[in-house]
Length: 219
Image (cartoon, rainbow, N blue to C red; front, side, top):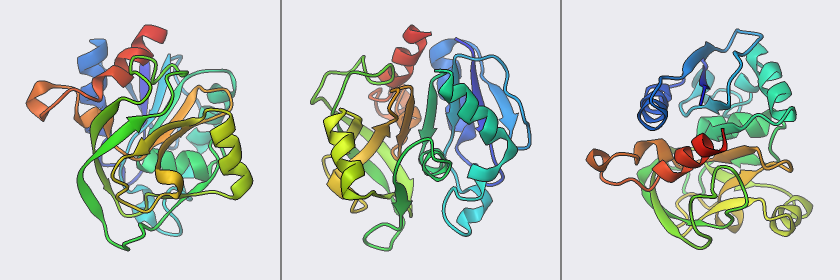
């Protein structure tokens, strides 16, 4: 599987993602700077976590207008899998590739701890190696992880089985405890927790590894 990690000013989890992809796939991903207007031919595009542009304006709002995002949107439309983690999820929402928005945590405090997630659907290339209802662990580290959308959007997400993960112990006040969602084509996944930080026993667990192995198998 060939993959690419897109890096923005303020990204700080790209090294974690590169290490995870290298460990699972066996080869390091390409690293793409935000000013690029084209992407290499890859089987997976990842927008990593961090604080693009210092989270000024709104988290992900400035990065969503970066030149590279036009290429990301075109590849997503063509069916290429796109994964956005934490700030990557925020960018995908701000760019219109996923519905809704990520707002300040309900506590108005930065949350950095391990949480539990329930796998809500296995009908995606990212989640198919889990079992529906399975509870997994994953770290979170964000100040703007409170997922919000209007009633019609929430109804569609539920009806179309596009809620990928829900928090068991909601750390940020997200609507319907949503931790991750899919687009209509089911090839774009955005989630706030960091599965890339639980793929090796030395990290304290391997609950996140199945997500990357599923993407590898799909490729």
